[in-house]
Amino acid sequence: MAQSKQNILVHGFSGSIDKLLTFSLRAGKTFVRGFKRKEAERTEPQLAFKEKFLAATRYGARAMKNAALKAFYEGLKKDGQSAYNIAFRDALKSPEVRLLNTAAYNGLPGSKIIVEASDDCTVDKVTVLIHDNQGVLVESGDSSLDEDEFQWTYLATGYNTMPAGSKITATAYDLPGNTGSLEVTL
Image 1 (cartoon, rainbow, N blue to C red):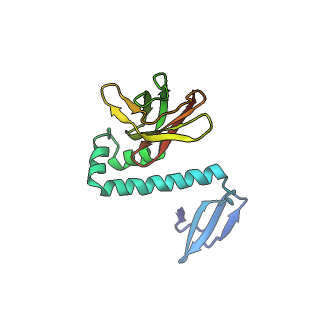
Image 2 (cartoon, one colour):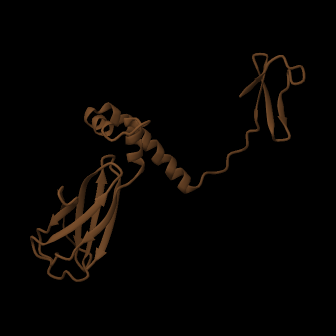
Image 3 (cartoon, one colour):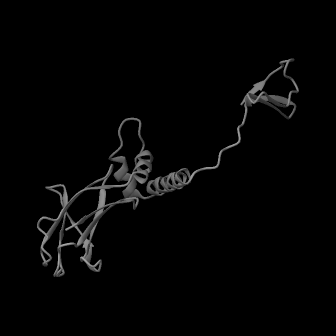
């Protein structure tokens, strides 16, 4: 906000001029600023993003108080970035499941499901749920990371007597707890 100093034309002004400028008096001094427009009602997506932004701010602050997380984010920063910036961005972006390969799944224990997932920082874990063709949960569990292949592998433990029509869902989690999922029907 600009302050008018010894300007005889606007000294003592108070109020708005044609919805362009607003003058106000504080402690005997005249201040000028742009006209303040009434804020429009926020939409549901705007309110949702505001909440996500606040959650990312809180996560960034918590991550900087956790020595292990701070060191992790310190290792990812580039010129002009801080570990807080990286943690904040990580909290804003959800991981993505790019591929859910069910070609080796036949409904028997030991059959493989391959998942490829990515995140701007790291994918913390990947879970798999298998529902039969009636929608009944057959099994669920965590996948293991194959670092050489940059993919996650889930080995089935239960029997699915009718795998045709079954739904398999893979969900990736990042460190802030964001999720991204992909579902396929056999």
